Length: 69
Image (cartoon, rainbow, N blue to C red; front, side, top):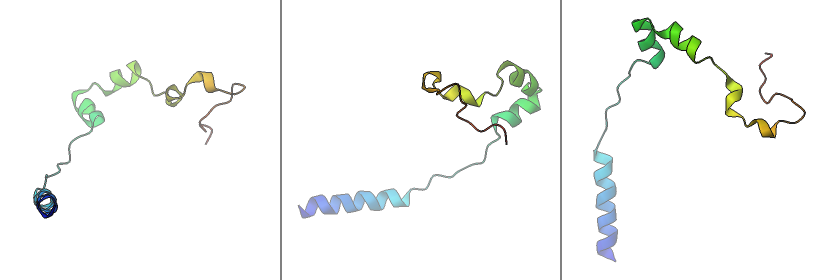
């Protein structure tokens, strides 16, 4: 039992010693703008926030999002 606890403690300690560096990358939008493809992409795939809601749950045709603001 002591061996299992010691082994778990060593594994936890080993994971604390490993650090993964994070790098800031360009967004997909920035990359497309640099290549001149952003407008084409925006027209081909328009922003539609209501697509994530199932239309069968709509009550009396009311919107689930507040787009009026």
